Image (cartoon, rainbow, N blue to C red; front, side, top):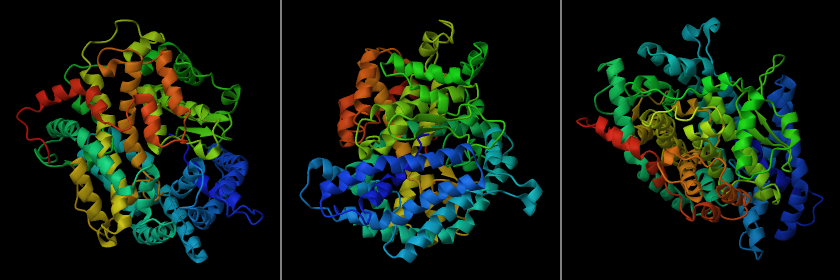
Length: 598
């Protein structure tokens, strides 16, 4: 996961520096951006350091220090972004015009104009996220038996008892109803701030950050979804039938949506945890964890393998400070946030990861993904601060995932983890396991923000929040609640990104772009064969073109960055279909005689 705090508050820091009372450059857009960027690095570094300390030394004091820095930024966001907006239509260089546009659209939340509304919005934002973070399910209101999200998620992932699954699914959603009234007021104030910047609402503000008109972007993601929808429908049909075989007709219908509690994930967003229930007969797979253990690979060794992937492409090695300052193991003497994240502390070479690495396949893939962020940071650190971001927010996540797609049997052989010829020629199991993660996610990645766009615009009114959520989940995912839901519930609040006001479309885009990137890189490498077996490890031409795109940061519109690598200025999900083409054929064979769809 890319470290997101800095990207979310960059503009606020930048504008705070540029519009300080001592600045006399407020009427000249070029001077405005120059003054801002001259102060940006120190301000951003201070914020990142506070966040790093808080994540690595969890105490009440470090949480307060980090929260105070965040509150100071949010308090200034609305006023300062409006000052940047006043330059719209003024004569300026293309470079300055782009920076001004980025200032207006890189914020997930715009504060309203009235100070009392700013204070209220800040309290609502922090309060909603805190409500989620404190969430516990206490059966029978017994504090001695409370379960947090991690414990409930493990039940969803590992239990095969429908009743136990249902209890965990319902239990987590008990945390959300108290958020509902607060979220309604949050929407009102957030929209007020967005309108102050010249946007129709907060959803329009988010969609304006993609170098295209908001409505055009909405149409673009619909087009991408339609490209992959047939593949998803075949996967859904197959999984529904296999779940019906296991749980019985009284739990899983022969046609229609799949009950949401049966797919191994709290939000049914990825289905990999039910692979054992849907795996092809007699199919095995590569146990990467066992291979790593046999080689006695430790946490640092895991990272060295991932670094070696990038240096094989021609990227520079990681700086020595990376190894000195990163957190690779869970400490025994303190609490830390173990969730994997990549950090660019000073935007000038102080690169770190924070991850409690375990020696297994999941973490082996994750560390390759995290170093994708790190080498992206390293590639664009020569640019001015506003451009030290990915071409659009989907690119950063996609790059790490692209590298992970090259963790193939051939790659494992090249680095000496797997003996040559040790794998089967039948890749059905491999592709199905991948599809349960990647393909299954696509409609969920789309609907989270589609719901919020409709909420922000008023298309989904406050008295239909939950109905609107489940309407989209059934329409796009073919998923239904396992028990009746009503407007007394607030099921969107059970997904972190909603109460935390974190845009989600980046993940949908990343799940499309990673396959488009992978296909282009494989073609540059001269690879011929099934796309899912391609690894670009060791290919300098592929690495050169990848670095060329990464080095652009956000200095140019994302279609230009995309064209640099792929030759196309349009996002294209056809590479997803190409990658899973053998699986699609197999699924269609398995689904013969079944009524697919919902």
